[in-house]
Length: 226
Image 1 (tube, helix red, strand yellow):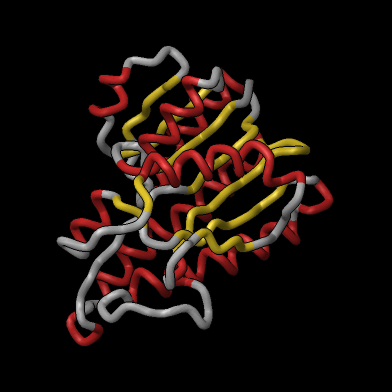
Image 2 (cartoon, helix red, strand yellow):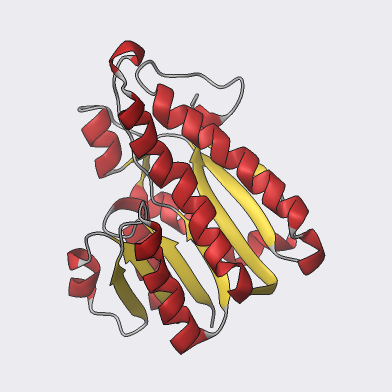
């Protein structure tokens, strides 16, 4: 049984991941602003906390729970994401800031808060995007999103190096298109080749075993370009 922290669990991949870990007997701390969907699942292995991860004070709700009930964390999955689709000249500084708050700053802050609870053999998995991979096909309108996803890749590589002596593994999964609500909102009518459940299956298995084979790596999880 693992103690698993997952962000962005109100829908899509995060929601499916929380259910899958819980159904397989693991303890899940599900972090998202909207808690309704997972509360309705009513699985005893899932603890749902309403957190706005863009606010540092909110993130401490998670560490307070862990300190009181778990004492350690085996897996952290940085899954939450924010996407704004606008032409570059329409993007404001605030647009960039809002995207970076969720996709980069919150990842850094939550990881920092959980470092004391991550022991030898722990695995931090950050969900990025093919749009953040150098040389990949890029989509117009995603300057803020894709650049943030590139930044979090470099962050994970750095953390893998910094904490390798403590044997905490940091890896990134750069996902291609997945049929989620976020994708539909950004690209109405676009049909992705994979469902949220299918991608959650992959991330579930990688989170449990990937740190035996990888550290500081970026795996491109896409059957298409991107």
